[in-house]
Image 1 (cartoon, one colour):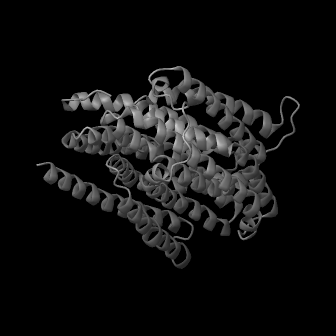
Image 2 (cartoon, helix red, strand yellow):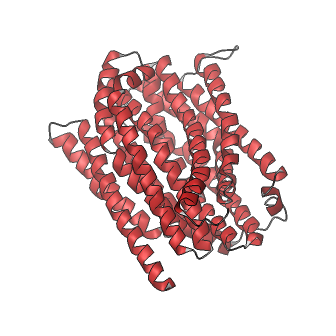
Image 3 (cartoon, rainbow, N blue to C red):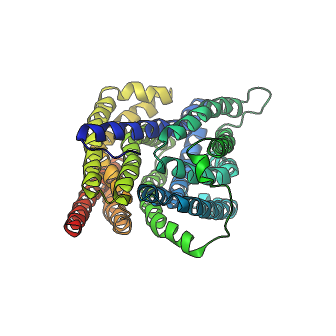
Length: 451
């Protein structure tokens, strides 16, 4: 990436980095989106089963692949410091970490999914769908984790458009496979929720193969030769990755599990409530792709500037990212409030579920601003490699403040099921405030030391 001098140049640079990331995230998210949407049209029981399965799958996947995101600031800073020869070693060590994580999760799914689901109060049909969905998804674990390493490498070089192209190529395939396996087309049996899991797993393999071909054959990736001269696992290099990646993964895990925990707590209510909650959460997650993409862009941009010792530019990129996310949050709120009934009707024809979803959307609109602040601030902090304090703040905000608040409001006040969403708003708001304080403190410290 080129050094930028003016604010307008930085805005253009950020747009070039963030827009492809956003399109990539949306395309990846469409897999889960179509899983929920298409199983909702198949059966309400299958929709509830996929909802529970996703609530268990997403935090584990995002948390552990978050560990692999440690590669992004490492490579970004190496490129900013002109130390290209060290990139290959770190990427290869990332592959070792990814493979180990995938194997651990695969074994855990086989051994633990039955006892875990038995502890959740569910109808038998919903429990069976959730189990089959997770079994099928686990087929794609290894390629999914390995692709996460490749994508972190690609994005760290500032070539986010390449990740976008790879993902866009696979999204229509996932939709087509969903259609075949969920509804039983082309001579295949109708698998419902399990078919959605199988379609996603096969798509993960496709993404992985395509990414290998592109990185192996095309510049500037081919010049770094990440598949050549393989080194044996290095404790020091793996330690460097996990030292940065582990707090990132735990932080992401803490954030995603709070949403999954709320979904599981919702299982105490009716199938209609579970379905409505999942629809609201699914669409809200779609809107979250904007601040999340800006956050990922902030990590790359800030990482490059820090690696080149341009701390003033890193600070500018940090707050420019926050401003952009806040601006888009007002658009998200408008969409949720103005079109909530039409959006709910896309997911299901069940009028009771639609009515409940509309009510959930009102609360979803309230935490858009907090999301828009905390996401890019986290991304900027990762660019500075400041991750340990961040994950502590995340745990406190979401688990010590947010979830207990939601539980109390849901079980001891008239808010009932909506109390959990108020708890989410409180947790996200506290997270946004504490993370901003940390970023301001860090930037003042670096400015003082630089002077």
